[in-house]
Image 1: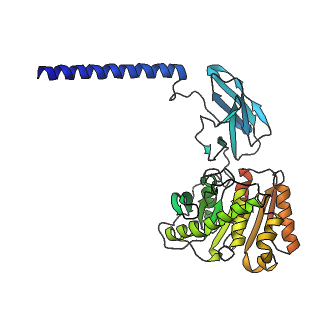
Image 2: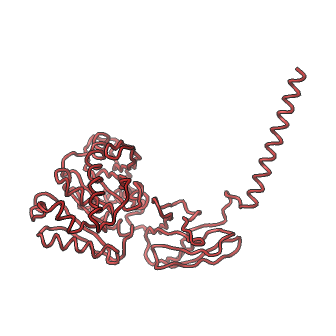
Image 3: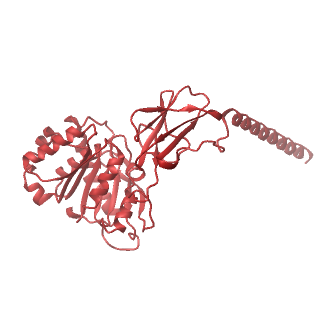
Length: 381
């Protein structure tokens, strides 16, 4: 018994010594790296008259720059006290803007900002500037719900993610809702229309105002796991073909077995931004028996792809009897602007009617939100 007591005492002493060593090591690390729970940086900081201050703490950086879709080029940050680099810029128009820091040539998100841009490649944060009149602003209206889902893809041979927005009142009722399949762009994820596009908030506000029909929105992951060819190439159509199969064979069956959605073509719309716009155009033209509403945001199909895959469909009756809406949106500074215009010229020459919105600005999510808000007010009416 005495020997057991001595062993217990030694064990307790060893544990105390180990605990003390760990605590000492942790204190040394905190002294060396700074206390992660005591961040002295507030960033971004929105001031008066559109002035916004961006800051990042880095003791070892030699050069820090700011990149943001609210300005052209880069802005250099100045190093101040406590190794905090900062810069203040003036932004004329409130919106939600992606931005990032360039630290010694490496792009990083803002470590002090919880609003992150979901993306496969570039790492950016989001600046949300207050604007009570903006549709992306959360207001005192009934709110829908966004669900994270997993479905099995027989086309790609793997499990795949998607997000689903259901409008306010969905859980309490038995109604079948029209459904919008909303696809994001190259390198974006299934979360981008939710966290950057703010589709849920936009629809909450428009539905409450009576400007949009209550609808379900499905946000799939658009990457087909085999590269993304340039949209000007015929190879892009091969990727679009895979996406089209994924949509009709996997995504739609999953949604229709899991949610109360309409299953008639007039109850389905498809739209997308950038790569997602090309995927939406190709999928709808490939399956006019399943989609009656179609919108493309900053995207196009080339005349070569149109003639190769859809030449027999390209007649005026397409817009009269098949598609209840064919809609295009693009910014004048978008690097795809000229290609989108060529796509519109193609439809003009075929006598196919469409609606379009040409805005200022480039290939940005600020424009994508604008196009979304315009089209959801036209779907299913």
